[in-house]
Image 1 (tube, rainbow, N blue to C red):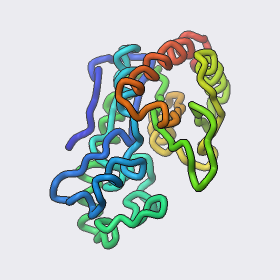
Image 2 (image 1 turned 120 degrees about the vertical axis):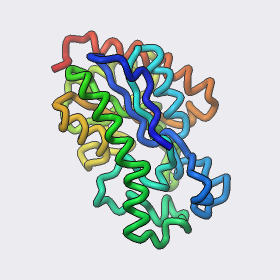
Image 3 (image 1 turned 90 degrees about the horizontal axis):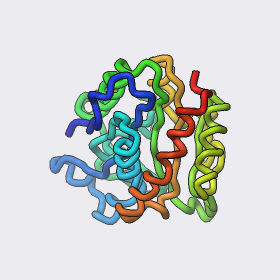
Image 4 (image 1 turned 180 degrees about the vertical axis):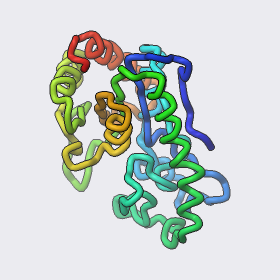
Length: 242
């Protein structure tokens, strides 16, 4: 199960998209890590709707995109190798039986099979796009621990403040409610993939988080992608790109 790369031949593109939590899929031999089908379809396993938004943005903007192929419960491609949540034993209070006792061989096997190919695919695309904006696409739950998240899109950044603000303003102009560094702050190191590849290739990077209440139907998620595309295009044309 290799990562999916869209528009891979778009060398020197101005935008590269990634989606670290694109899929809830797991190879059959993992037996769903012991979880029910209901849990495997929910946010603990993937970012609902993020793949459809990424695919639509790639189509609308002619941008290359790299999407993960397996559930973040097998290995989270948006986590550093030393992160405790790389292969989580629990997620949002839910025990993950298949991750309770991962030995060194199994850890290495998952990294080689799922994690390393994903990040290598991003590197391969970025090597041909030296002046691109790297944009990571995620979704979030409308509520967490009893707290409502009453907005539509978060723009996450730990640098490139002017780019982040321009993107937020452009998205807000489409009618979506936008917050900066919410529901998570990139200043807390929570945009690992975008940051590591952006810095590694010397390109600007941002992450967007979209409320998954907007994305639970595929058609709705693709409509959000269509809505966001002009806002991202406006950023690329704004003259603020380094």
